[in-house]
Amino acid sequence: MDEVFKALADAHRRQLLDRLHERDGQSLRELGEGLEMTRQAVSKHLAVLETACLVTVVRHGREKLHYLNPVPINDIADRWIGRYSRERLRTLADLKHVLEKEPMSKPEFVYVTVIRTTPERLWQALTDPAFIRQYYEGTGPESDWKVGSPVKWKMSPDGESHDWGQVVLESEPYRKLAYTWHNYQPEMAEMFGWSEQKLAELRKEKISKVSFEIEPLGESVRLTVVHDDFEPGSEMLEGVSEGWPEILSSLKTLLETGEPLPAQDG
Image (cartoon, rainbow, N blue to C red; front, side, top):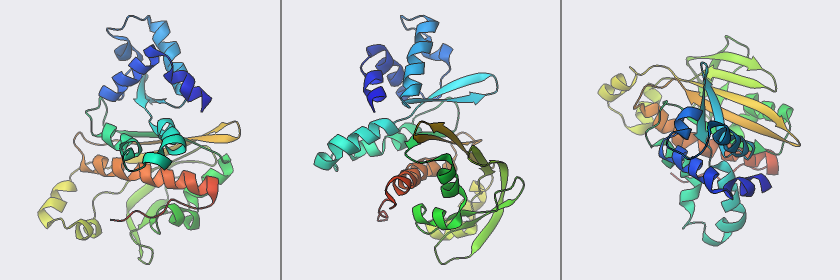
């Protein structure tokens, strides 16, 4: 947490965070435009922000794009502020949701968190059905997690597993897991009250994918989640931008305390 305070203490670094708040997913060149800083200075400031997990970098071909990651600020709020003004400051917990609704240069969801656990334990949490059910509130994916294998999905604790055409794309134990995401399904239409016409229209969207990258960080692990390949204006992007922060916060809490976050009403 010392790195976070150090990073936020510099006005230039706060300016770069403000720029990412206004428009996420910018390159080094874009972030430096109009600033009274050299490219090298911008790069050094971004490195400090990345070390503090306030900024994460995602590669698009040969280009590196920078994304604002509010999780460390969230952790500060939970530790020192939340106990006194939790309701009034709930917007901090929802910051990622707010940011994802802003126009972005690339239609994708990026989330980074540091968890006090081991790569092996985190991999188990991402792949073991019994573990997954704990932080997915009884639902979630299941697979043998071999490349090319199907990923099935449970919509309720007592429901059957659905095969919606999801496939494992990458599987490197303790390092990386990636799979295609499901399209809109009749079960979802029933749950959300969509008409057949709306469901048919939503199903025209392309299939997205999600990846989990695991990086050892001392006695902790950095988890980077990227959900991308959306079409601009995708309703699925809006949905996962609301869902992932809660799921991943519960995963972190489960690994660090042995108990997931309490289930949310509604």
